[in-house]
Image 1 (cartoon, rainbow, N blue to C red):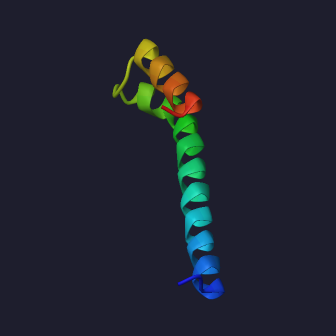
Image 2: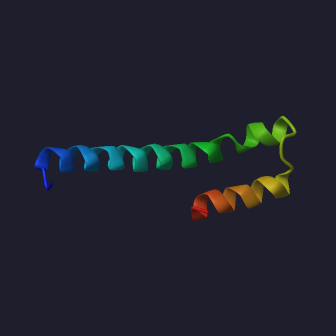
Length: 57
């Protein structure tokens, strides 16, 4: 039940998930000017989204 290989693979998968979510979360902030320019969000809406993204909500 406590297989070291399974533990390593599980930890690797969990780490990859955390890294992927973190990179995706902060990459979204860089897209904000384009989203405002395209009319998807107003400046005030984008500021709320930016704060929520950086706060991890």
